[in-house]
Image 1 (cartoon, rainbow, N blue to C red):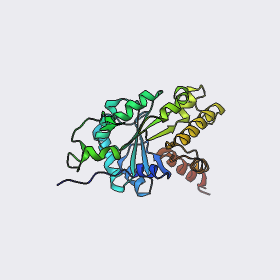
Image 2 (spheres, rainbow, N blue to C red):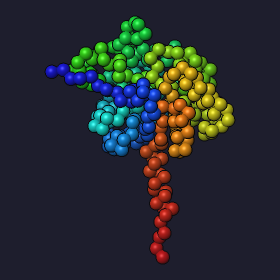
Image 3 (tube, rainbow, N blue to C red):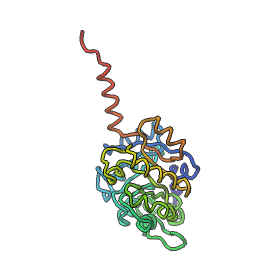
Length: 263
């Protein structure tokens, strides 16, 4: 008996020009992914660029995905590079929304998006056909005909070359979103650890203006709720509120600050 296609609610949020809120789960815990979904977050960011399991570790990804599926939140997976084989492997594990780092040109972006599609820009895509978890092991009704409608592939803009090529990158067909990366952009501009440096903020504003002009969803980091609210008002649609360890650090330190000890 065939099952219905999967629905990517995060994609629907972006298509509706609404704002999606999420958190970076940097302990890679399925329990916390499930908990964040219960709290109502639109996405849980799993970063496979700087830490965590190998992007090719399908078993670990599947555990995290099952936790997300319980509550309907979406796993947002970042890959360390735009490798087509890595993209296909990640999607076959059941990831529906991902973004890739270390891109500089529109051609690299096009190859990444093309790898995620059965059909792309009027031609056959490069997804590859199998019966993995993404198709519910071959039970999904019209898997090849519906899968492209549920996949979102974005890219991080995090170096001066990518910023210089931003208009061509934004013109790549079916690009899901661009994510403005101030921390790595600061490194590439010679100001590591200074995401609010004037030179970095100027490039971030270039990205924002170009994305809005091209009508491509824009993602970014929130540095406190005032910043999140400001960015939501200025056109960002995908906003990360913080990290698991950052949230815990703030709460535990507040406990210590309020502890009065023994008299």
